[in-house]
Amino acid sequence: MTALLFWNTKRNPVHEDIGSICRDHAVDILVLAETAISKLLILRNLNTAGQFGYHEFTRQSERIRFFSRLPPEYVTVVYEGAGASIADVNPPIGRRLLIVGAHLRSRMWANTLDHCLQVETLVGKIAEYEDRYNHKNTIVIGDLNMNPFEEPMVAANGFHAVMSRQIAQKLSRKVQGRQWDYFYNPMWSLLGDESRGPPGTFFRRETGAAGYFWHMFDQVLIRPALLDAFAFENLHVLTSTGVREAYDGENIDPSISDHLPLFVRLSAGGL
Amino acid sequence: MSDTFWVIPDVSTIRTPLIIMREVASELTRRTEGLLRGHVTSNRPRFAKSQLVLRLSIIVPALDNYEIAVATYSQPMEIYPGQLVSEILETNYVISSEEELVSGLKDLLAEPKVQKVIASLLSQSKTAGEEP
Image: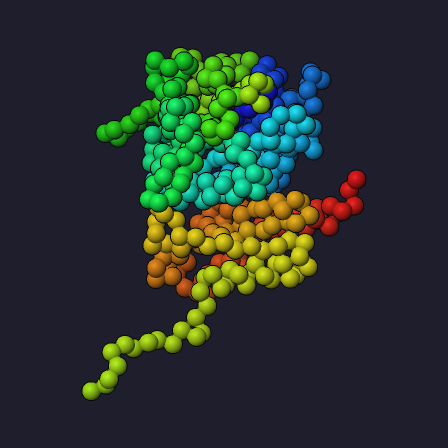
């Protein structure tokens, strides 16, 4: 069983919230973006109950930080760059995984073409490491600064992340003479009012003629090889940190973050 | 009347961004005696086929070939002006000439944040064999 938590913390001092969520949900791998909290303070809060022994295994990146309660020899960051970091997770029991923690460029500074280029680079890197480790047990988790329906998310040379498990299970499709691997994007099923949980993970008041208000910028993408380990009920946009409510049914509490945390658990049976 | 139609310019003195970035990469490998390996890749993204994207990264053999991206130059068909992006500093520069690319890379690599990364990787690399 592997439990992952991603949170863009907006550089807020939410160390107690991080510790609480990780303990309550028995998070194995924590991925943080926009976090200015010191390593010491985060670890003190993660390990406070003496229940778990987390450690940070980020190498150089300040954009993405990784923490884990798996022993250090089983988790290694192998790549940092292009708005993402790639970790090789090789537990003693179960499947070897590639965890891609991502924080892609903000919409304030990047247009669709910028995102296309950034995603294409990242997907190329992912393919390189999948070849190196000879598996496709890959999960992308992070603040992608895009909604699931945007072009770089769905394009064959982008993430190629589809809304249907059935389509993803076909593994890949041929476009313009080349085979492109799928990701499954379960975040589609969490969009809007009739979904389980809040309408998105990020809210922005819109002043322009058109606006979505709620955005699903924080996403998890799963390669088909891991779909047997993924059940939709194990995916949650968290609205409470255990210390306080992050979402009151209308707004995200800005003193906590402007993003809600994203939690996913892969089942033991599948892994 | 001349019997040639084409005026072929002399390009023997032009150093393309790929050559410059390869020189930068080689220098790192040479000066660290291979502890840090400069690495350049180039590709033409399908989303923007008129651009050549050149990426400079550092590979650390002693850390299981850990790789960190340092800089990316997006080169248009005319070579300049292009965009130099620093992955570590998270900043962009518009580059208008060969001289600007050389000085831009020099400035970028001398930045304290980049120096800190290089120092960290180099020291870890030197001690990697000593750790139990």
